[in-house]
Image (cartoon, rainbow, N blue to C red; front, side, top):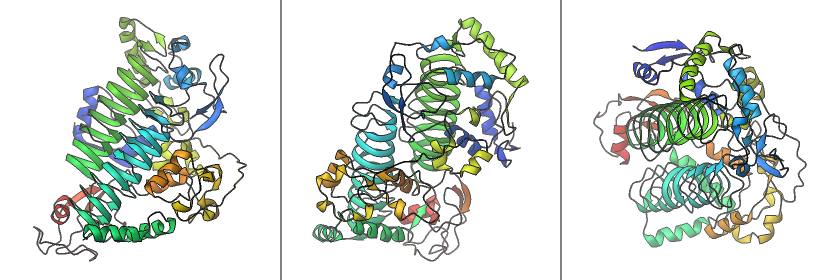
Amino acid sequence: MNQEIKTCQNCKQNFTIESEDFAFYDKIKVPPPTWCSECRMIRRMNWRNERTLYKRKCDAPGHNEEIISIYHKDSPFKVYDYKYWWSDEWDSLIYGKDYDFSQPFFEQFKELLREVPHNNLVSGNNVNSEYVNFQANSKDCYLATGGQFNEQVIYSNHVVNSKDSTDLYFVFKIELGYDDVICQNSYRLFYSQNCDNCIDSYFLYDCRNCQNCFSCVGLRNKQYYIFNKPYSKEEYEKKLREFNLGNFNQIKKQKELFNEFKLRYPYKFINSVRGENISGDNISDAKNCKYAFDILPGGSENCKFLWWSGNVIKDVYDGNVGMNVESSYENISVINNVSRVLFSVSIWTGYDIQYSENCHNSSNLFACVGLRNKQYCILNKQYTKEEYEKLVPQIIEYMNNMPYTDKQGRIYKYGEFFPPELSPFSYNETIAQEYFPLTKQQAIEQGYSWKDPEQRNINITLKSEDLPDNIKDVKDDIINQIIECQHQNNPPAGGCNEQCTEAFKIIQPELDFYKKMNLPLPRLCPNCRHYQRLKQRNPLKLWKRQCQCAGNKSENEVYQNTIAHTHGEKHCENTFETTYAPERPEIVYCEKCYQQEVM
């Protein structure tokens, strides 16, 4: 089919379905979407609670111990400790139901979703890591979410194959790192963003293969540089001592200077490594991937509308997927040897699965919850292969003939992801609030639920402004203090909207790390620190723009080109789609102009 413009059923804005999209939908035999790509992404994100944790009782028979859970104690969902949930002591087939052709499909799924017990955390094969979520194959981690194959990683989000690090966001293969955002393959890297293969460096942006560098932008294969100027080894080491990097106020000053310095240099319109025919941002090892964001190394091909995905994925649209996934559509948290999984949540290893949640090592499932090692099931009821293959087309036909209508009047036929009102979580409990923040009123008006913060009676024992400035002056008994988050007495303009915990503690491994790496104590709680890192990334949106190289200098005349470009004294005519909005202050160059200046 040719390109077609549709109106989004949710936001009422126009969106385009390209001919290549129709080819994909036809290949996997699903109808085209009725929601635009951004609204579809938000709808999926509303099913993923990564960082909002509660204490509650375990609901498993004979168990009443207190557990940490992503489900609040007042949630209508039954919750088992994940060790019991993964055991053979219970079978989710006991909740199986006959399909009722007199009731809308999503109403029946909602009933099943509330009856089948859920595991308290999304966790697998972790050691000494009780306070992690969406984490697997990790050891000695604490409040690390959305990652795998990590060791001694704390207060971090979306981290893979990393070790002995704190306060990271979206990194791959980092060791002894701190406060890094979107970096990979680096060692002893601090306060840096968009860097690859860097060692023993501080405050870097868009640097590759650099060592012993400080406050630099866009460097390649350099050593002993400060603010993009070369120094001798002896001069560099002397200057580094003068910076006094164990002092909080000095670090604060250096951050401010570096943020100003970054704006003097051109940025490439897309942050990518080894990409071919791609659009989006933060992409590694990808080919023919469009509107893709945060794509991990390992190889992604022929994909579209992805977020936080990668590591061998092919022919996938609309998802958060990873580790050998192909021919799948409209999923979130789907990983590890998956094929033809559609409209589903938290599927680990499986194929031919539709409209299911939290099912693993299974195949040929439709509308199932909490199944393991099963096949040919509908609503958790076992069928023969012949019965299953006969009934599923009948259900799909019924979904189209009698669609579900939500409270906002939005219609759900076969091909739509789960309605937001079925989600086990409130909007502000999920990552949707982190990437597409709403007020309570906005969320409710758009059909999402909202969780009001609970009253906390915290006995603050130390104000953040009373913390020692230098890590060398911090005593070991700091781990016994309850420290007030700086946003409580010095909130940002407009107040803090960062799920502030009001107070925090320094745990022993964290203190050991700060002392070992000569880093000052933080003044913000872990949640507020997480949001500071989120602010450094670009939004999950694209704008059409023109290269800002205007002859021999940038449009704003801040940056002077170092060589003559192929377009000479004329303004570069190249256009592109970028995550840098037109009103932003960064100097944004096309690939060719950027390479002529930076590479």
